Amino acid sequence: MSRLELISARLEQVDPALAEVEERLAAAVRGADRLTEEPAAHLSDAGGKRLRPLLTVVTSQLGSGAGDEVVRAAVAVELTHLATLYHDDIMDSAEVRRGVPAAHVVWGNNVAILTGDLLFARASSLVASLGAEAVQLHAATFERLCLGQLHETVGPVEGDDAIEHYLRVLADKTGSLISSAAYYGARFSGADQAQADAVAAFGEKVGVAFQLADDVIDVASDPEESGKVPGTDLREGVATMPVLLLRARRAAGTLDEAGERALTLLEGDLSGDAELAAAVSALRDHEVLEESREVARRWADDAVAELAVLPAGEVKDGLSELATMLVDRIG
Image 1 (tube, rainbow, N blue to C red):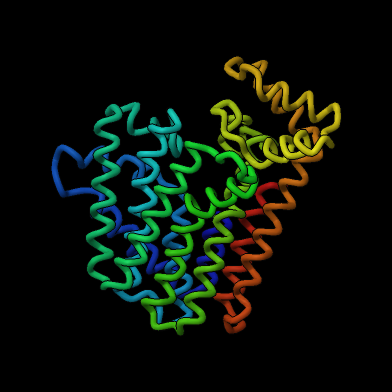
Image 2: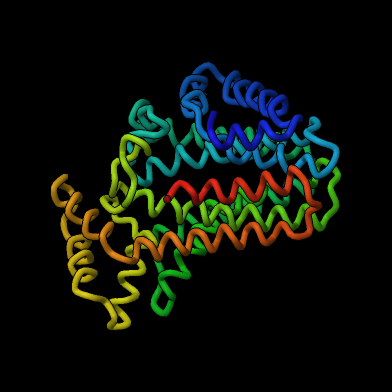
């Protein structure tokens, strides 16, 4: 049993609700049109952590539990997340997602883009059934998802702090939807507004922590455990937190010889496996990797601090454990 499953199992009403979410998700990615059924179900059928619907269902335990509106919201946030993956994989030229070929590899870019759009439409239909507040939040979240991707693509403009820019990108691209997932669960179960706002703030910060942990995993992980080849993001030219910390030291004139060597390797041609392995090794051995771990842990700690207004009990404990689990992956 995974750590996420253990967290959900602690709350008696969570597992049945997640089973209902899974059923409705399977129905939502099928049935609109025979032409789109297979590509639309492709990534959903491949699995995934279901972190966002889990948060929606867990936070619903602050109120009356996972009723029909909560389940609809949980399906909508997962559909939105799935839709972003179709588009992200094209932009990143990713060939594999969740252990299967990316949709654009199987069906081509046009079909993959339109499938992502279709999933966004289905998510929007579900959100519309929840009322004006949900529609407004969904639209604001969708805008942040787009802006986060745009800002990542364009990069920081002159005068921007590169690290602050990167953290804003993570908050928009990842934190915003996780925040909405947590908020929906509290709001549509009748929890009070202060609690709904608290779990929303928690969700955004834990989303940033999650991505920062992934930055460390990209450098430090054992591929047999993570399922990911070390340096994948580096090869794609993504300036993750360890790289940004090296660049900040260079700009400040405090970069040591080992760090300069690592940056030189990272700024070179990483298309070959030997070159990539050398760059990963140099980065892995530098103290900025531990500094990146600490940044991720601080964001997780700040996320947990947002839960102070929640009553003591299984929900608060489960969310705190979730934040810890997301950064425990980095050792």
